[in-house]
Length: 404
Image (cartoon, rainbow, N blue to C red; front, side, top):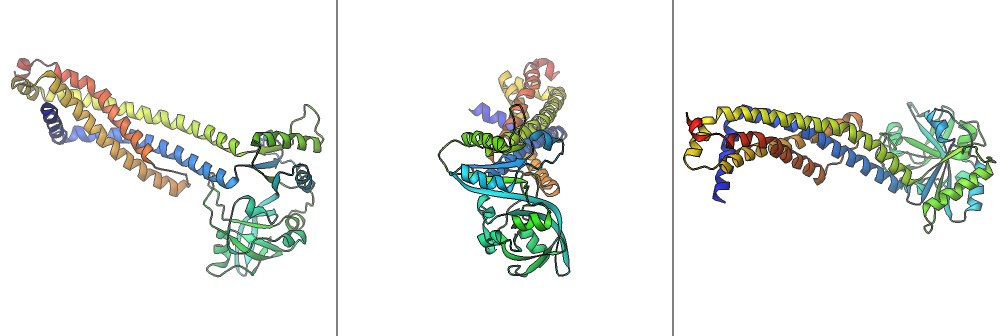
């Protein structure tokens, strides 16, 4: 035990004494650890964002879009879902507690007095906020009468409220949508952070779907999507298949024809994210590992040079009673101390870089003990692996030749 303590003291003294070697090794290791820390934090952040979204999306919820996956991948639009589908799904599936239509129009001009802006306008029903578990911060939700009688009323997001009305309360005031449609604000949606794709969810307006389709889209039949929430009981896969068969039959699709709609479930969102983050991990992971390997070779070469510079010191230590194991352990401890410090510095660098990345690109990051522990463990392993060769070289020096 005494020998080990003495070896640690000698190693710490050598780390401080050989400043240039220590700095080179420290920075080379810290760069590799910083990149790996960013990888872990970005993956955890992406998954956390996805699970937050799925929680708001709803565990027993499906989202149906018009058009097949191939058509949307090619940028094509297809009108397939109708208001008639809404009624039919509600009648065919008694366990569907919410069947909510959704129609959207982006970059729509809005104004209040002299203040103008653009936002996303969504046409839906009084169940929109409930289907997304989105509370009302101020005022009231859209009512059943608003939807049934086609009233010019709307809910607005927090960003819209701040842009158009500044510090004043927007509830009860009338704004203009698309320069000519007056709309009375009934309430303001609570703050909701940006989505996983960096979209500002607070920048939107929700109005009765009939009003939007008639006055804003000039289409009284087709809608963009349907949000369906089922009662708990059966697995969601069962409802996906039943809904698919029902819509195929309703849309009179023949056998062999592809679906003219796409059903999205929470599980598919997670799978998509896993594929996305998987490619991110592979690309960034390779660069991080390569960076660590390069830093390891830098450390090994600098330590081998250090062995030559310290040949006399090693010989004197062996002459006064130090064993080969003591020399080996001292050099290995030196390498581990430097790489461990590099691991801590790399984590701090990665943390700082993540803050910058979040501000510039709104990229989700989440730091936890896992990010630090993985980075620190890799830095220690790097020191142990690449410190073995210099340590063995130092331990095998002949003491008499070393003193000469």
